[in-house]
Amino acid sequence: YCTGNASVSDPTDGLTGNICPTGAYCPEGSELYTPCPLGSFSLYEGSSDLAECELCPTGLYCPQGLNSYTCDPGFVCVLGASVSAPFNLTFDGSRNTTTGGYPCPPGTFCTAGAYIEQDCPVGTYNPNYAD
Image 1 (cartoon, rainbow, N blue to C red):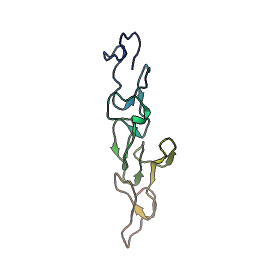
Image 2: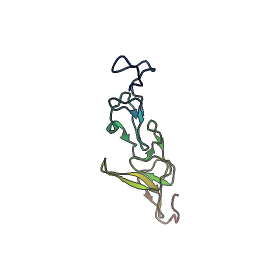
Image 3: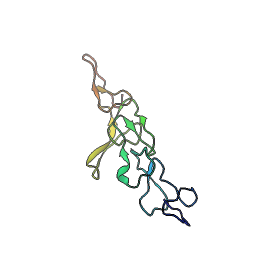
Image 4: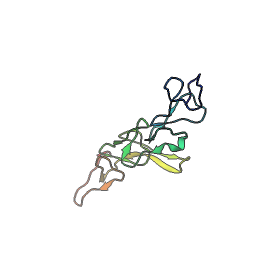
């Protein structure tokens, strides 16, 4: 990206511009970097397109576009979760996939980092959500 008064097209001095940082992308001609959206991340410097921000993997959440963390017990995190205890599934039309997550339903349990709920063992029952 170029912040101004650059004498070269790809400045790296940190004053007139720099290489796009990890966790962000920089379209051609941008003056600043754009962070990857919540629920996505980029581990590489120099990304130039939103498509280079990958959805957060199942069982994890990505709140800042850079790091991923394990989702809380009692919740299912599918692709693109942005919080540790998600309550909503959302359809991402640009990627043609469902993102986010949901509380573990009654009759099941979810360990930390769950990407699918597990049935309670025979002879047991969990009547609560998010347990």
